[in-house]
Length: 358
Image 1 (cartoon, rainbow, N blue to C red):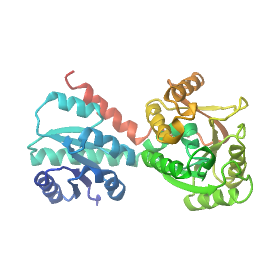
Image 2: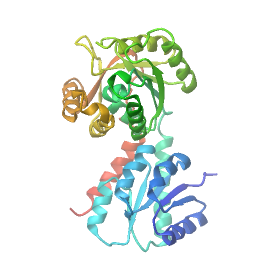
Image 3: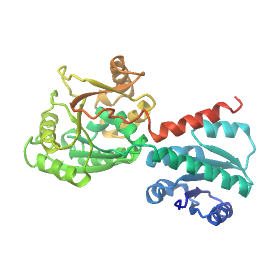
């Protein structure tokens, strides 16, 4: 027997929300309704829906903006956008913002049921054809190290439905106020949809032995990563080199380990894989910029610097933007981006958008 479809409805009109819930519940769906869109991301984590239905105009946010928030938590989730305004412009904007369907109020029960069933089934089918998700651990000495070195790669992992964890071993007290830097680290992790493991080793004095090895080993034992990203040994910063050495020891049983390029990597950094991050560069820049206390004091946080770096490495890879990796242990396509659920469903959305009037 097929599990009931799970549906989240975000609609500031309680009567409309109740109408939709009543219709879908009678069809066997499990429906959660929210009149306040600010709860949407929290609801996505709690209920893991097959379909999200949202109004296009709500206090403080539009349905189109909500799509980005929904997919940041659960990549590939189908979204239906509703409006009372009969307008081709609305339809074009909604579908080009990666909505899956556009429905005009009042919505007929038969149309609603048919669209929800089709999108939920497409989503489940796409997920079932995918390999088991990876558990990804990105290790950095300081807040922002991981985002600068592998932010784009981590975004492709999240888009593929992989679980992403960030282990930051110090709170960056030498580079700014600890309270600011740890807050920024949590913000960036939330934007990425990652779980942050934040430690408090002394900045600039991280050891390559204990307690560093033990801390990393504990996280590895807790989450059982299949893919690890960490600093390279080819780095001017002593903390980065120490974390690299400790991580190689602590992750010796992990099948895939690679080193990313940090801001202080030396000319001896020798990448041998270049992961395409086309479509993710802007979001990577946003992740790095979330570390606001560093933006004014570091050129490595500048959008133009990050873009230029990604475009330079693309000369060795594919596309227009790449992140480089030194492979310690190989596991094939580390990005998982070529065949993920998000891209398969995005192709369907783009096909529908091309059919709309310009």
